[in-house]
Length: 358
Image (cartoon, one colour):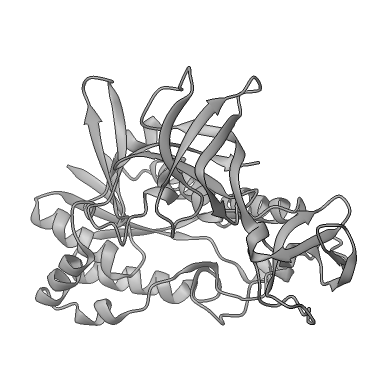
C-alpha cells in the first residue's frame, strides 16, 4: 500500500514511518508549512505548533525522511491555514469565546487541505497516516468507520479528532493507536533514535505567549472587570486576553478567596469575576455537532462527555433541541464550561461525536 505520512520531525511520526516500512508499505513523507513572519507570531517563548521554529521542524522532517530513504514533500498551506484556522481563532476570541484551533486544524487542514493539495501536486497515495494516539476500525453492522480512544489512555488524542468525517476516517491510519508511548520510546531507542525520545514535544497552539499581533486589524479595547452583580472591580486589558476558569494575570487584589474568570460579556466588553464555586455548572448547549461513529440520534440518550482534553468523560444526558442543537445535562456539576470549546461524547472507548459549546 502507498501511504502518505504526516511528518513533524518528532519521535511519533518517525516511528510510524519505520513501522509502516517494516510492514512492507511504500511511505511518502509530507510536512505542512503554515507559518509566516507576516503572521506577527515571531517570538518563541513556549512550545507550540505555530511560530518561528517551523523552519527547524521542517528541516528535521526532511532530514529524517532522507535517513529513512523515503520520498518527502513540504506542502505550503500558509494561505489555507491563515484563512481557516487563524481567522477562526481571532473571530472566536472577539466574540468572547475560547477557540479550539487544534480541532479545527485537524478537520480542515491536516486531514483536509493537506491531502487535497498533495493530490493536486500529483502525489499518489492510498491512505494517509499520522502519529496521533487514537484508533479507527470499520463496523460491518452499522457500515460506519468508528473512532476510538487510544490503547494508551494517558496519550489519547481522540478528543482532537472528534470533528473528522466518515470520509476522512475511511482513508486514515493511526499506526500508534494500539501501542503505549513507552513502547514507542523503546522501539525508537532500539532503532538508534534515542535523541528523538529526548526531544520535547509541542504542547500549545502558538509558540508565543502574546497572541495580540493576530488582532492587529481589530480594535481591542480595555473594559471593566465586574462581579456577578455587575459591580465594577477594576479594568481589564481587552476581552481577548481572558478565558473561563482563568485565575492568573487578572491583576485584582483584596479578595478573601481566589477569584476566577467565570464569564465573558463581549457585547458590553466585560469580564465577569467570581469565586471557584461559581465555575461549576451542570448543563450546556452544543451546536454544530458532528456525529462521527453513529448516525444522528433521534431521541435523548445517556453517554459520557468531556469538555477538554485533560478530563475524564463525565456521565450525562443528551437531548436534541428543535433548532438542531443539543442540551447536555451532566450528573454532577463540572468546572469551567467554556463557550467556543468542544464537547466530545463517548460510550466507553467509542467517540460518538462532538460539537461546539454555545
